Image: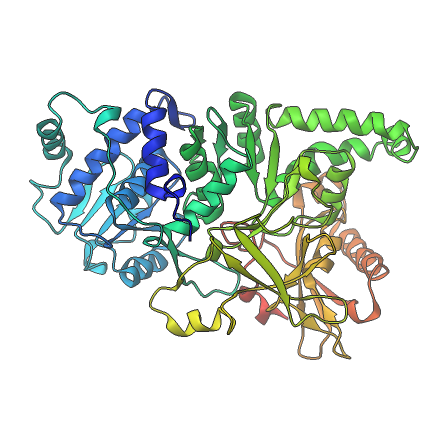
Length: 558
């Protein structure tokens, strides 16, 4: 447990707000809304007044659901610095799922985007005293006296409390130890079972500490925040670490298409970029692949020394596409396509893959690009913060990844059985991932324990590795490898219809291509990994917010 005051979660933000009072803190990208640290602190103070009017007590739960914006940020920080517990809900959750989380957590206040409120009413969430709009702070629904819960009343209370205005010298957050609970974050995994991760402030502070001490973020840093803040990955570094360091985060609330992102990168010129693989893979496929497949370039890339010139030009082009001023790109949330990773590694693109999970808020391992990150690994355990070991390794050294350290959760809310099953007898957290540690301490992830398949003679089959090979084939958008009851492997393939249409192929020609692709992929696989059947799936697979396919939805299709 980090007990030093400089690592105390609440004190880190108190210091940062005071030191950076007049500096920009958050911008709602695409609007004219930019708040300085001082203006954000005033919103937090007003929310504290609202909480008191609603008689919110220490450790009460406050839920927030909506797109990334400055109001979302204010609610999160106001809740935690007040002594309450924040319950972030992913904006992509359906209304029924959101209602379950609000009720299961026992949340007393709900801050929600107007669009997310559709399908919910106060009768379905009986413990909630008030629902407030994240769009413009208007009360959407009230179980309390509406004369108390409105921002005119709050403004009057604020003026009464601070007749001379609210300045850095007036800011003071109540003491909270890092052992106290900061958040309950409900997972959205690939197994279909959402659990409430109880995260102490220590876990949030551990991620912030690493972000600052590793210089991933710093005073004056610029972040483009397009990952959902309700997910631990984007929340930890694009929001919490950035603001604790005195940085400026630009919040994107729209769907983060490559076009929108590249425009934002060009305008903001971020100093750090956090991404999930799918975003980078799409940009690579649209921007880089057409270049390297052209005969002159593809030939030069095979010639020693000459290839360095081409690689350098491609690297510079890609760096400029992301704004040109970032020191590091971090890829996490799901496996990165090995072909994409190998090419980016070859051209020395400043990118590293990290590994984490919601239960660690989220980071477990990471090695920056300029500190010797390794191809196909996700770095070393965070020094002084996290430890990793491999349990029950096979003859290749592959086993379940278990971890312990500052960033780990307390357990799952109201779920003692799941909590017990998630820890080893000696107190290490089970990740559910299969991995291997090399002699230098670098971790490589092979797949999920629950998705690993068994071959006819008990061989381990990692479907993610086969899918990566399929996804490298032309005209394939994404794929999913599953196993039938007779142990044969089936590949569900979603075509890239834009590419197929542009090629002019008929349905019969495309079916022939897919069969040839199956044979090509099988030629690169062991006999027990062979794909027996390919089925065309007409739509993109449903995914979690970090863009991992929800496999459980498709197992019945084989």
